[in-house]
Image (cartoon, rainbow, N blue to C red; front, side, top):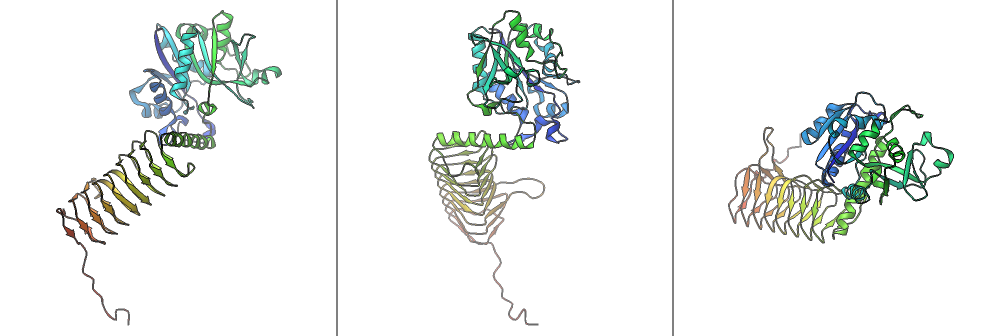
Length: 419
């Protein structure tokens, strides 16, 4: 089979985004569009990736670093011309090259694998991803022969009236034989309405040479949606939110309102946990079974929550480890902390973890009862079976089994306001 190489096209200006940044460094759920595409390619088993950059190239390089190789496009002369810039990396290689767009971030690794597998199994020199649209206006049409083989992809501005009636469109993902792609790119010409080198013309060139070409139809059309403006960025964010939430519900998590629950990538949630509305859970968070999270809570990166934990309304956690059966019911900030099992954190409690120079840690043991409106001035350690009186500001360690009261004695100044 040879090797499989990935080429990601990310050289465009993205003028409709109305931005001073590269379009592909805009984020969905905390990850840049280009990062999402690169991650997907790696998950599909492709380890050698070339990213073609141009406009604001330094921003893309700053995001991806040395995870990929770079090719440079100084003039924007069409998708075929963009791929030509990657040819020096492809020469002398045998196998397949998968070509994707850097602004199409929701394509799944499984879809890329299917594209590669079909290309290999059916001995196709070009295998394209297609979709069926009820309204295909604006998209390149997939022209097949009577046997169903792909003959050509015709862009909207070059299509005849009959071709415009075709509902199968080019989805913008390709798997080519490396050697034949290089030969076909050498034959591309800009003889079209746009005056550009179309990558899609490679299909026609290969057919004229008698090489077998084919296609697979994507199962979920949301995978091929691109980002051209802010409205589309929001729409894809919405789609990804629903996709992630659906996965967790399939795994036994109750989400009361998928429209107001924001669970980022790479979150683990145990069975029978309930997520209440208006809750945000950031990447890397691990939540155990039979927990209750929210409403209106914010679980930030670096949190691990054990089984049977309650995180209530208007609670923010950051780099917090919460033991089994512990409750943080409402209106608390617990950052840079470890809390043991079966501990209760009272309303309005916070860990004061930042002194203006460094972050410090608060450790609270098992079976502790923390009253309302308590401030823990980190670094501080609270033992097991302790009670912290409401309104206390804890600046020193508290031993096991102790009651800690850290507040001024109340003083009433009589007749203070009788002047």
